[in-house]
Amino acid sequence: MSSFSFWKKAMVMLLVAAPLAASAQQHFNGAKAVEYARQFVAIGPRWPTSQGHAKAEAFLREQFKHDQVEEDTFTANTPIGPVAMRNFIVRFPGKKNGVIVLATHYETNYWLRNINFVGANDGAATTGLLLAIGDQLRTATANGKKLDGYAVWLLFDDGEESITPSWTDSDSLYGTRHLAAKWARDGTLAGIKAFILADMIGDKDLDIQRERRSTDWLVALVRQAAHKFGYDGHFFQMEEAVEDDHLPFVNRGVPSIDVIDLNYGPNNSYHHSAQDTLDKISARSLTIDGDVFLETIRLIDLR
Image (cartoon, rainbow, N blue to C red):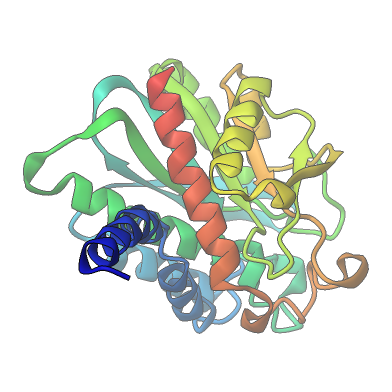
């Protein structure tokens, strides 16, 4: 091979490799999300009224101490009486008028308080996911800068789980029912362009269902985002209706989607069990989630 041919081939290889390297660098840091989830799980069970719940609140407060945070406190009327609850809303400003909300619940079940239920996938993994997304948003808005598109608000909502084992409309979704009503009263709801809920998507065997009451165009954008990265097999292979934190917003006409994997363990056996532990979640799944969420935000901004 002549030296010319050698260098020509070398340049071609560099040109091919460069985009691949750049692409790899663009992936979301799922390992950081897992580390946040690990710290959150270390708190232990965090059911409302418990010391763990207060520690979970303190943990979130510490993570966002330099950000624009609202602590939305309220008293929920529950089967065990009035219970103090708290939503955390972390705001990152955008150049366009309007808001995209990314949400997760952070507490564990009161009725599972006696089995050391730490909710590694059911609350902690998605809390870690939003914390890691928050790191990226913080960097993007440093020194007074704004996101190129809509503002993004991270919502860590309280009281998603029912207090008793029998889930009902009145005993569930306390935080988002309260917040949707509050934002309807003060006019905030009208500015929400999309409400994106993350729930139970740290599972190593990631299989996100298409939730039937989610807004069609948001489902289409999430599908498009997943396709960009070749993640099609992890999304929307099955369809079902799910009672979850997006519904108070769906019911008030806000475009909303529940990104959820309810196939957790053999026959869903890890769900709401002491087996919902940190070893069941993976950085790979949270990388997929983060890639798709951030790309979905970009696609919403382009609408």
